[in-house]
Length: 92
Image (cartoon, rainbow, N blue to C red; front, side, top):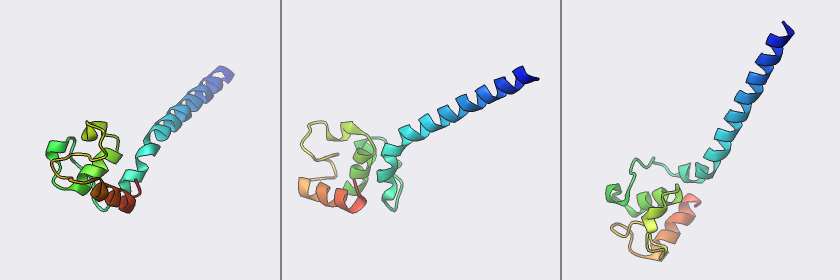
């Protein structure tokens, strides 16, 4: 009986640790979820506005700014000022 109780406690502690680890990894993306829409795009070819591109970039898609000039998805964003204004608005 005591062995079974110890085993259940051990499994419970392991499960809690795993859940906390998953939440800790998801936290950096929370700032990108402040916009009024969810970005379904997974690449620059799929975005239709600069705001979507900035949200995608802020969500962790680093390839959006491949040349590191501060402008993600240059097919829809044209200036650093435009990007910075959107970043301020969404809290990125």
